[in-house]
Each structure stands twice: as C-alpha cells, then as structure tokens.
Length: 396
Image 1 (tube, rainbow, N blue to C red):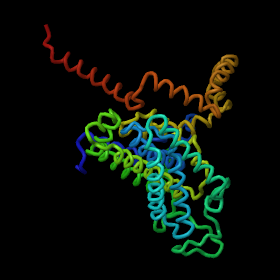
Image 2 (image 1 turned 30 degrees about the horizontal axis):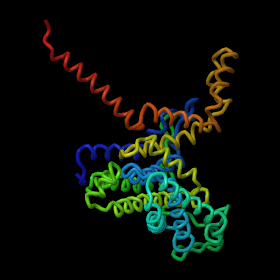
Image 3 (image 1 turned 45 degrees about the horizontal axis):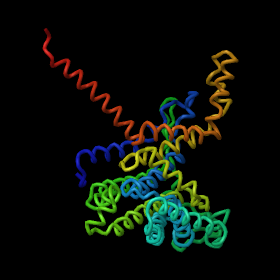
C-alpha cells in the first residue's frame, strides 16, 4: 500500500496517529494538576515539534545515509524563511506560494553550497558548511540589511500590500490558507482537561507527513542504497567506476530543500524572520536532534527533535518556586537540599540536562532513542516467548 512494505506502512500509520491525536497525547495531566506544566499540547510548541521534525528528517537524509556531517544546515532554514516572508510581503499572504518558494530558494542555495563543499569530505566538509552558514548569518545580520532587515529581521507590516491580497489601508495582513487564518483554534474541554486544535498545526502536519513519506521512499529506493554505499565505503565505490559526487550532491540539495520547507513553515506559523535562524547554534541543534533520536533511522530524528524542543520549552520553565511546591510535604531541610541539588538542571540550566542526556545516549545508546525502543521491544518479546514456551511445556 502506498508503495511501502508492511513494516514501513505500520510506522507511517503510527506517525499519522501520533501527529493527528497530539493534542490529546501531549496533554496527559488535567489543567488543575500540579503536573499540568509538563503538558505540551499547546499550538506553538506542537508546531515546533512538527517543523523541527521536518528539519531533522532532511538533515538525516544527508548525515544518516551518506555520513556527511553538515554544520551549516541552518543557512538553508534561514534562506527558506526569508524567501517565504518576501513572498508574503510582495505577492500573497496565502502560505502555499510562500512555502513553495522557500523550498525552491533553499534548494538553489544548497546546489551552490553543496557543489563547493562536497569537493572535500570528513571534517573539511563540515568546516566548509559551517563557514557558509556563518557567512550567510553575517550577510543577513549586517551586509544585506535592506533585504533581510538586519538585526531586527523582517515581519508583515501595515505598509505591506501584497499583490494578490485585498487589505484595507493600514491593515496588517495575516498568514492564511485560502482564507483560513493560521492562528485559528478550536478548544475542547473535557472535565479538567483542555485540548486545543490549531489550524496552523494541522497544516504543518500535512507537510510533515508528506515529507516523512517521501523520506521513507527515498530510504528504500536504489538511490538510498547508493547513498548507503557512500557512507559504507566511498573509496571502494569509486574504484568500481561509480561516480559518487552526483549522489552526494543530490542528497545535499534534497536535505537543504527539507530545511527550506521547515523555514517556510516557521514563517507561515509566525510571520517574522531574524538572522538568528542561520547562526551556528541552530545548525548544531539539528545535529543533536538526529543523533539523539537515532541517525540513519526513519523516525529517530523526529523523536530527537521532539525531545529537545520539549526540554527547551518545558524543562526551562521549571523554577525554584515550583520545586518547593513539589517537595513541600518534606521536612524543610530535606526540601531545601533537594531544591539546591536540582536547581542547576532546570530553568536556564536546561542545557546542562540536555548535555548529560546526550552523553548518556552516546555512551549507552549509540542508536539513540530508536535503539532504546528496540531494546524495550526485545525485552517484551523475550518475556512473551518465555511465557509461550512455559505454556507449551507439558506438565510432569
């Protein structure tokens, strides 16, 4: 079905279910509960899960399949964002043309960067991509200020009059899909639970599912097999007479187009762009996402993106006052001691928690969160098989 084998089809259906029912899955605690702050089912964060999941899927096509580690992928995210915002400022506030242009411009920029960077491999390739990203950031920050808005960035203003949008004088336009506002939401209250269904989120989900489906087809295609051959032993591949350059460049461009799509969706959800999207830390973040989730796997980068964005938005909001509420049932001395111990790992210190988690994954789970899931699955299957064997053994 859909050109997928049974295993991939099951995975695709699972991803569909997780994304469609995310408002329920990410809000496990009632609003009146002390644990409600761990709920992640609000539109802004759910959109980030999806958008950065797309970004990580695209990066994984390059890094996971070919082994080429790019430290400059945020440049394509930024180029896609700028292309989208200019399309909305000049032509139409409909998000479809903006997203398409973000993919096209990011792809064209990836052709240039990839053609030059792929002349080298290993750490030299990584440094070249990092250099391109930092140059792009510097250009966006200062040199190309009329185009990029410099430090303050770009956003939709009352003076913008898109060609195909009928706006009243002085009206600030809003991103929409054929009239449907991206910020439109419907709230469902069930007892003490509140679930929010946002239009922008589900539009992003459609693009994410298409991107995920295409990545599955790419992974299972002969092209994907050639990329694995590059990662396995590129020198031996060249000795057989196969030129690996076109394959690696194609993978680089496809990966850049995924990043452009993510940048376009970021603008569709929040119509403002700044040069910080192209900074080297953004490129490093997608590397962490891919490795944390499981580089070279289909679902791993999505899980890694969700984990990092959850920690960034949830763990970072926990402060000492919240900790004191959690441990108020304990004697004062023990309560203060626990708060003092946990304090460095929450709030602004969430990066420390992420760093420790990343170290633990690298040391104990080289395959990332996907490997953790596989290990747990094997434990359950092993337990089930033992039970079956015990039942089939005749009683003496």
